[in-house]
Length: 255
Ligand code: CAA
Image (cartoon, rainbow, N blue to C red; front, side, top):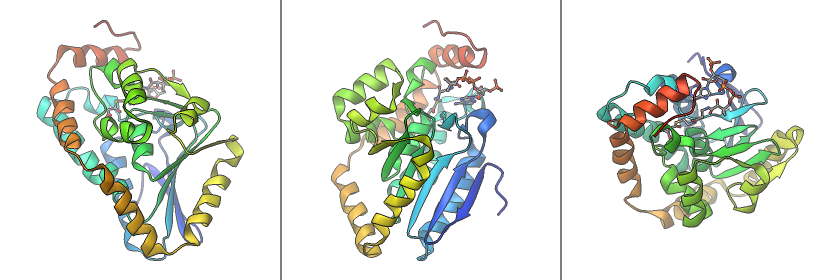
């Protein structure tokens, strides 16, 4: 398969995926989600691939969210479908992989971009990285598992703060609240990711897969389904029209 939106690099016993739409700050459109699914499926099925590292191209963004332009005219049903498909192909897919996936966050990780990082099993970031859930400023909620994985990772109190205020935070604060595992200098980001790959892959691969499965199963709930429906409902509101129009026309929304 030819990839238009990502670069795929096979290393010794792992793969490096670089999300590659730098002009749109690596925003996740449908094609990119399908391409990521294709590579991740291959990585999961090939026993020679013992880990995956995901990063973004350029110095500005890991992923600045779902592609707002792509869904700006969506209806309630299309909105819910977007969440369902995205979660099945990418976010739940990664979470449930038995091959460990590490997010190497090289810049903005916003909205769907932060959700992608949260779905990965480990997260490291460079000092310049910025994190946040801007969805409520668009009349939406996180729809790719963020309302579930954020409180699992940082606790309900920080999750309420970040999702309801839509504020952005830097790498140090993200580390302080355990949103990320480590902060390093930009030039050390990939070397650190590879070091973690080395630490994991010296262990038994079957046991790693079972450990991921067991840890994930301590977090079973119905929230993911409620999130998809609630995300869809937002698409029927005038707030959504106002929020998205404001973003596309580079102005502040008036709610
Ligand atoms: N979707 C589509 N395009 C995006 C994008 C996104 N999420 N983020 C950035 N872009 C585009 C911009 O429209 C711009 O394109 P043009 O050059 O064609 O105008 C280009 O990337 C560069 O962006 P900016 O000019 O805005 O760069 P900046 O440095 O001024 O600002 C930023 C950077 C603060 C990250 C700003 O781009 C921004 O706020 N982006 C949107 C972030 C966001 O709201 N993310 C959540 C999306 S909704 C979501 O993810 C839903 C979900 O949970 C499923």
